[in-house]
Length: 163
Image (cartoon, one colour):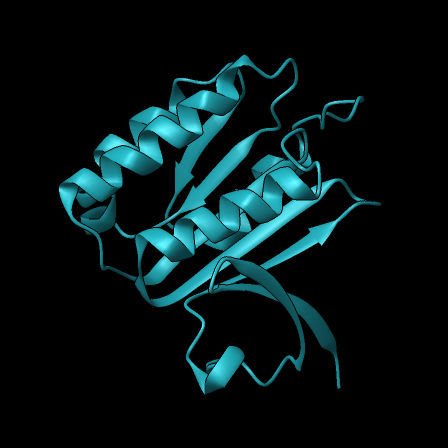
């Protein structure tokens, strides 16, 4: 059985959780047995940040993911974000807050390539957010399947320096 370190913000503090990675499709539980809609893996050796969404993603969930990425100094890593099983649980103003946060990272010298995996319907819903991601000085592409996204990312360089 594999284990993964997960982080969840609770009452302003970041709590680390080590939980088993179950078979595909099984929802993992976080603090207080709350479903965790975002799961991520940071591989410092491969310089890869992988995130998956499963269920309703809130503003707090998205900010937690961004904080984890920045805290791990992983902005220069290649990133694959799979949101095919995500549902939107944010208002338009909250999506705008995420866009502003993402754009604040664009002044970093090295941003890793980003591959987004989503359905055609999601690309319409998240067009504003995708625009904020694409505005950075880095390779960016949207895919309908994770295999194509990972193949494309494998051909993209990771920044050689860390933040």
